[in-house]
Image 1 (spheres, rainbow, N blue to C red):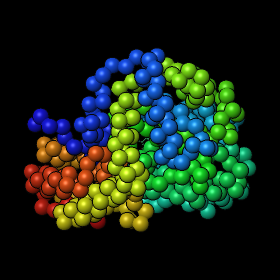
Image 2: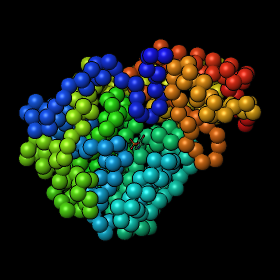
Image 3: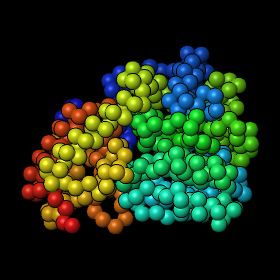
Image 4: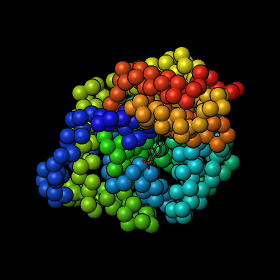
Length: 372
Ligand SMILES: *Cc1c(COP(=O)(O)O)cnc(C)c1O
């Protein structure tokens, strides 16, 4: 097969030809043309969250996790105390990197099938005055749960705590308004719902806290304050920029704006999600989450109960039919995940459901019905 397979994963995602073609040129990192692309991209990103007056956006080389780590290291003082609201795998990753950055870290555990609770957060902050910052994962990509960003931000504001948001898998698709939701840092990346290619993250930092971040990072490469100051002064990235990733993201953002911005993207992903869930239901598959807590980003399905099912063989069969699925990330039960995001529409999702049907046939499985 010489066509690229369609990626139904939480990133990298299927991109448009226009985005891919943007990568066919070489750019000098000192060159005014490239610096203009960076400046235009930063303006466009700020506009997505309406953060022009209140926030600065700082791009950083690397995958999304690099930017989460950089945000913690830059925003939290070395003697700070971080509370991570944990309802899944990406929360656990955030807690781990916080500890490894040498910051005191407490984890508040929640069920991975439900959103985190702002009331439980409020109680915790009332009893432990030493907590300085809260980390929230907006869409927990592990199971696909949408967490209550606005309500968590309100609790943090009321209690005078900093808030760091990992909005990696929601940014660009779900509404985030910096004028209405108070956060110190919000992290996203090029290769998710903006439909760029992977290779850079970006962090929105509240201007009111920016100066206080100077010197807090114990890492040179991960210091977002330093990256910010250098970029403001020179228009350049501090160290070698991922030039092709930057121009691809700039091109992807132009298409995002042409499509109608965040509301249009959410509408397309919601159609993808509905088409997926309806189609998979016809094959007997049941989603793990209650629809009321599900973000239209990635869907976790129970594995089929048939003893012939095994994820690796199922993955290989679906791949043979042109679609890349994703393993589950739950601790207790056997699941797999299917993404709704990327430069695809309901037509591709219908084809994906058909590919899953063929994959089941290949494995001699009559139905996707789980054992439960
Ligand atoms: C994709 C993702 C990340 C970043 O993962 P990388 O593999 O480092 O790009 C972080 N948090 C969430 C919620 C994600 O979905």
